View (cartoon, rainbow, N blue to C red):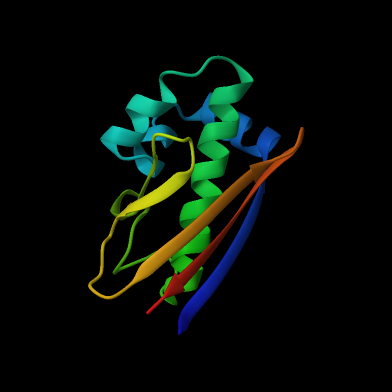
Amino acid sequence: MIKGIGLDMIDLERVKQVLEKNPRFIERVLTEKEIKQFEKYEGSRKIEFLAGRFAAKEAYAKANGTGFGKHLSFTDVEILQVEDGRPHVTMPIKSGETVFVSITHTARSAAAQVIIEI
């Protein structure tokens, strides 16, 4: 049974501008493990990665039904790549839930969809 579906989209230029103004934005959005993956990329691919993770985490919060705030923050959600390159939600892990995530990019935006199944 589906618990929730979340979808989010963000403009890459907006992420780039936020990052230029506040380099600590990375630490607000990404976990330590995600930062290690982020640091492997160069140039515009870094912005795509950050924007994709931002969108995926927003989509997760929507699918979870909580949004971000008092009970959930960006760094409470971790999305890592598995060996074949697919994104995988590694936390939070809730008993009995399966989380599906898809992240995509265009030249101008990143989007993500999350489905939580119970």
